[in-house]
Amino acid sequence: MSRSDYRPARTLMIQGTASDVGKSLLTAAVCRILKEDGYRTAPFKSQNMSLNSYVTWDGKEIGRAQGMQADACGILATTDMNPILLKPKKEMVSQVVVHGKPLGDFEARVYREEVLAEAGTIVQAALGRLRDDYDVVVLEGAGSPAEINLKDRDIVNMRAAAWADAPVVLAADIDRGGVFAAIVGTLELLEPHERERVCGFVINKFRGDVTLLQPGLDWLEARTGKPVLGVVPYLPNVGLEDEDSLSLDTAIAAAADSSGRRPERRAGKLDIAVIRLPHISNFTDIDPLGAEPDVAVRFIARAEQWGEPDAVIVPGSKNTVDDLIFLRESGLADKLDRFKRDGGHVAGLCGGYEMFGERLLDPLHTESDRDEVPGFGWFPFDVRFAAEKRTVRAEGYAAMPGWQVEFPVSGYEIHTGQVIWRGQAWVAESAGLASPAAGRPFRLRESRMAEESSAADYAPEGCADEAGRVWGTFLHGVLHNDDFRRGWLNRLRMARGMAPLEGGIRVGELREQAFARLAAHVRQHVDIDRLKRIIGLTS
Figure (cartoon, rainbow, N blue to C red):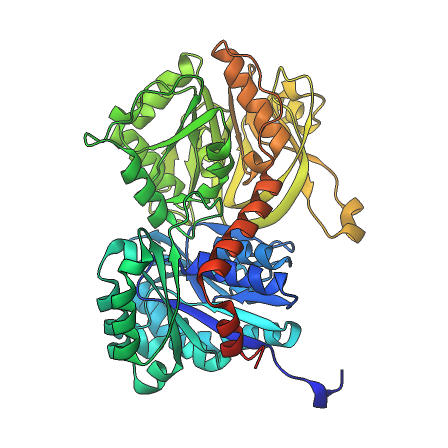
């Protein structure tokens, strides 16, 4: 193509009247619809705040939502789709990740005053590269564009829309009430040129008879002079990743009874308890378990919620030291230790795995203000937190002690913790993994593009006890591997006196079905033809 024929990608931006109104899923739906209709489409969010991250094919870290949206588009995710990621570490402090690599930890005020001034250049360059490579770029906003205290340094809502010259669809959640006030109030707080950029509204999460809403829709269009592009009914069990732990906490609150205790476990289902750490990260690791027909997953945050689980998972953490202290102060550490000593099944994922060692060492104060904290002491290693973060895609094989077969696995690693094995005998034994009995259940190598795939050798990873009841790994997404997950669940079933279950769900197939279902749902309830005209794809 000659430069004279060049035309940057068309753009559309989805903003919201508040957080958690469904922007991420609406963006994913529009991305999938445009892909289905033959347009090369990419997602974009200039700045994301989330502990639920995604590792790109080249080992860079971005927001999980943009990775999911890239999957909806059928393309590989890159850091241009989310050039700036904020990962909260403690009150008013976040780790700032720029193009997939940590820049540093910043207090909110310092970030706004010292970093945001240069962030616009980074964002515009990333957006420009995407517009060079695709037909359409669908942008997602953050929170609300009417957050007056933040607008002077905005890089993620109306200023990003201006950089992209993008028409804006304003999404609102009717389920939380006050939807008309939220829409009109948001418009009133925008500057005139920002208000002009809003091309219409989508009312999300509707329940009931839409004809009863029609008088309000007519009033809204007359009041604002802008169209309602669609009313999207609430779609349960979408089966796609949530942006952050806000939706997770909503689900936990809805599932608990009025006393905060969990109901008795259901007959015929494995009861798997996941500890809801204060700084839980990458909680989508658990998602496949919730889709299994023989599993009931529940999150617990207090000792009285323990119940009688068949297995307990300690998930990832952005602040492993403080979350381990939380376990001790809440009484959950005593429950977990007793459960393990009584022969219970326990799995640790990344931060949870780190807690299973002898000590957490943080001399650089990478994760906390403490130099050292004792771990559970279940495995013979210390964990030292380093300044550099390891972010890679990984693949290989896994088999717990006592398993008769190895299963292929793949996933990704995001951690600063480095395992330091204690005792020369253990180091010598684990260095050359001869069998799963050596206590290292995983054999992994860094994933590479196909032409480089033979360059890396497998190395032992993770740890397990002799019976394979307690194990841990740095490999996020390990439970997304269908055969491995079913193998572990069948061990739990046999421990409970239940017969193994053949088959089970296939995560990849369910994911594609979820994208198709979401796209069909939004296509049915949103005026897509009008949306394409707004984007400039049709006349």
